[in-house]
Image (cartoon, rainbow, N blue to C red; front, side, top):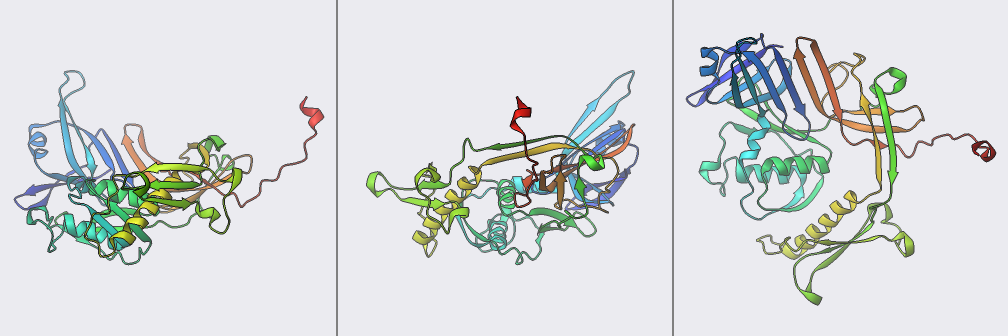
Length: 373
């Protein structure tokens, strides 16, 4: 695995060295969060000097760039001296900025993220000059027109972006053209590969699967309580989306009380009351999704060489899973771990929560109860 070293010289990063002699490399790329890495290499005085200061690692065959956050020097008379280099991907820079004032996002997902980036990182009328990151550029986000109503205070941009991308089923990344002196923020969605990438015992790439259906904590009607006291307290009801065309009543109605007193209507938004009620309803919607029936379907994904990263699938793509009982699910590739050491190279994809395909019936043959005694 060939890795390039970019060292900051003054204001700019320069390609300073290349590493192709590491004893081991772990390189993790993620869809909705920042990735991470670890490089284990023989130590020298030159390398100890090189890896002090701002350093970024890149590869020709990966869009993920890594930022050196920690290096550790170990000395051993028998095993030799080594450096352990580790850190997170370039997206970790968003952990360096917080939303430092109450902010209302009322529009589309793309507009909301543009607003946050403008406030915290890029040049705008309400951005402290010292917060600006000159290297950061933002690609067009207009295609991400999902409706967004959210209030944020005090969270890091990294946390907010990860949360929003999880909710709206997309990913975020920073890429470069030629050098880390200019990097570009993008939102993106993977492709549907459920017809071509299938994990199943039939293909020898799925084992030890488990399936559980759990109604224990299921709720479908949320009362979200906001500001105020007693009879003046603002309470907004939210009914699960699956019942929008029906009336939930009797035993079918499962109520839940959600305390959101910290969600405030005190803002400069021109329609603050309307936005506040919508924000509370959004909180109820998020909670209702969290309290859905738990359908847990998991298993061990085996890399048997059947599918190739970049050729058959990419980070963010959706794939199909099917077990011996005909239970099927879709899942998103949210993480890819590449490992190279003395044993060779291997790659392990990590999947999101598996979403079962309930519209596909499972054929069950007639059962003779007498045979079960």
